[in-house]
Length: 325
Image 1 (cartoon, rainbow, N blue to C red):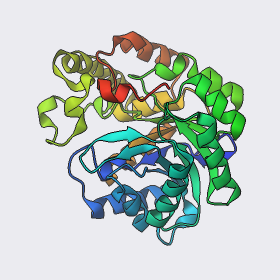
Image 2: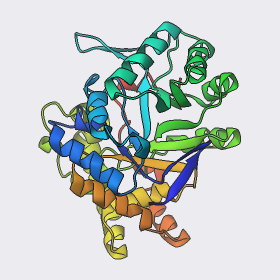
Image 3: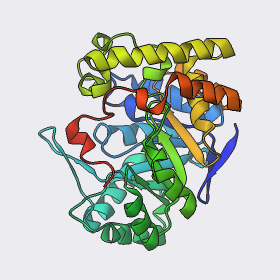
Image 4: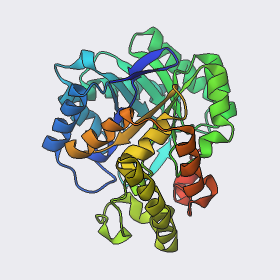
């Protein structure tokens, strides 16, 4: 497996997003999910990505069971900051006492003594980011956390947090269909020496070419409420996927491999984490590290799916309000 460096953290060139194994993308299968994690480690994937709010809480437990006995093979990333409520609601919490409690709880669920990369999942506008990051810095000093990350924060917030304690990685949605980091975020990260972890590099499955209709989603699949997967937006976006599929076929790769290769081509400081809960898709996605794109192929992809072409916001309004703070 090829390696990349995020700040001062060395990891595999691609990671595995574990969220969908427990929630958001229809029913899961713990046995197959654990087998998928084991296969990822066998293939040389070291970064596993989870969060306390996935499940909630059950995804960390699942990952913990999967890595038992193989802790040294893993760059373990988890997150805090999105607070789930018993009634199904959610909020954002960045209070220092909450940070400390969340870290201890994640360590217990994961069954580990330290977290390799601990992200602030979303920024709490009611708490100065300096206070949140003061607590995070204490966790590093205590040895509970090795590296710190931030997710979906505005560039100026990244600078403020980084001034309290160095940020190793920023996690943002980034794919051929989600190009927001290119506005100012990537420039800021590179100026500060921060790596980019790109989640949803397959556009939440759109770029895989496997989706043909929103009706195929399970009743509890969150894409049913995602603007890009609804009505005319979905029809428009599927037409773009057809163009991507044609380019993939011409190159002799799958649409998923082409999409991940595009993210990898954006810089050696970018690590995509494609989420899957099945070994078959894992192996397909992992093979993308061997797909090299020429400058001409990158231009052709840009012409086939320019940034402005995708229809619909990437989140529904309530979730959009929590990003770029």
